[in-house]
Length: 306
Image (cartoon, rainbow, N blue to C red; front, side, top):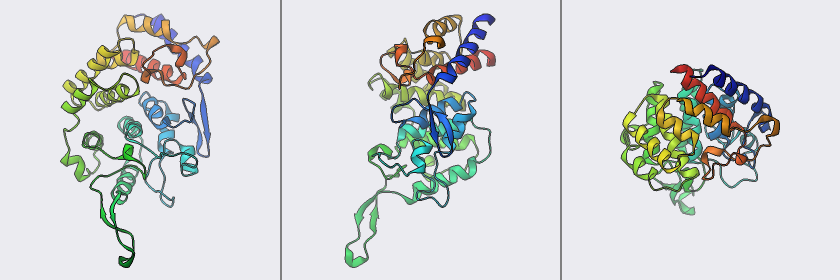
């Protein structure tokens, strides 16, 4: 493996990083892809897996703490936590929960016990109301939905059996107490995920399955399932370098050339407001910059780790 090319990749992402967009919040300044910053927990969760400390802090600071209105709930970024999502329709989603799980899975820091417990406490207490009490019964909720959810939102925040299974994997890997649903739905993230990855549209939906495969790589679990999902993602979008790396679970010489040939030149780079690896069009002009910082660090960690 070319040492000079590895050094060039390292230098490229070091020069690119200061040009990438950031979001200023009451809790600190954190990476963002720009736009409405609505998916920032996912991008920062990915960056946290390659050792980017500011991104781990971003995810941690996106959770409401005790004494706040929605203690335990995660927001899409710390700024939205600070104003309780003012001006935005949706608090959180299943997609964003993957960012939290990535941070949990890759973190060696303390605090996961309290953070995870606070999260599940919120989830347990905030199921949607299916049948409300009539006024003569004192109002309130008579029957709650069997579906748990991440936020007081629409259906995008409902926790599916597959996601309970993925959460259970992360909880178990960290020795955290399992929720009953994690046990009930253990293994539900297998064949269904493979079948779904084969039919969802190329773009952000396929990217979410790639992220699930990457999470399983970090956990060292479900080798057959994660490899098949990564293979499907790569076959369906072979020009996506993230998919290529997770399918290989390693780095080959051509990966260095592909990275250097496509990664923006810092001297001419102007950030867009997209995370390139979730785009159906892999033209680097769509890059926010952090996507390349993430991929470069992942490539170097796979190479150096191998």
